[in-house]
Image (cartoon, rainbow, N blue to C red):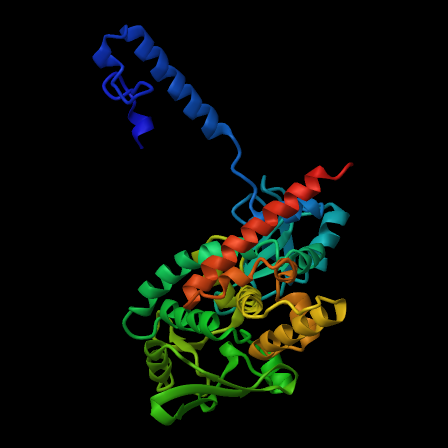
Length: 400
């Protein structure tokens, strides 16, 4: 802030002495002030650094967009719809109309926005019957997000303190408004790493995640502890204890609401509404400022737990390929058990590959003395940043 108010009274010389105090001509001070203003103006014109999402979209040949930009609007026309371009003209181009129809935006959606560019990473948004915002992404974006899941893990870890501050405020809200119940669900995601859940899976497969849990899935066990007991994906049985006592009390309180769904909130009319995964992901986007989803908690948590386990695992002697593979398999199985995945899926999708390399190079043993989850999170962030810098340096040094 000081730079914005620089004048002859506070412009400093190399040793911190006021330039005006040593009698320097006023024209020089004015010149320096104008130069500072010019520098600030130039800096303000510089484009902000690309986020991981924007970089990933660009690498895939996609254009990173959002629905605050001008786009096509859908309007009711008889029994169907017409579409208007940003200038308000009716869209008649057959190719554009074919792309719009291929998005299959449900007729019941309102406030429909459609991307004007066929290569936009986000192709459409709209509000469903309950007013929840829904998204339609470019087919290539799903592939990019799958391949680039580890590229954004650092940004996710860096955004966690901001999320936690927001959660603390929302958890203090009186009653059970939408923001508070979503904060409870997100806090549980962060602590337990349980899947967020999907109503279709719950209905068709009788498998559950956080947002689809029923009141019957919550159990009070010895010592006043609270457990979530449910059948998860692939029929796997879960018994997950809520370690945070205050959070456990919040969940017990919400269980007293009428209805079968565990996580419900009262809308503006006082009507109870069940939480769904889309609302959870919207909450994360709004609070964290990036396109993170509930699944990122599992990727982050799996990587932190793997780094922690590897730090406590000595390199075998001799370090043969077989011995290294066996030790890695043991760690992966431990993380897979925590996440409820098979070891193969866990290794491929939930543990950053650089953690394996760091262990083989003996870089993780120095972390063995760390205590507490926050220390391990910070250590994971530092390690991942360093690993990315090394990878980038090696990549730049390769002949093109």
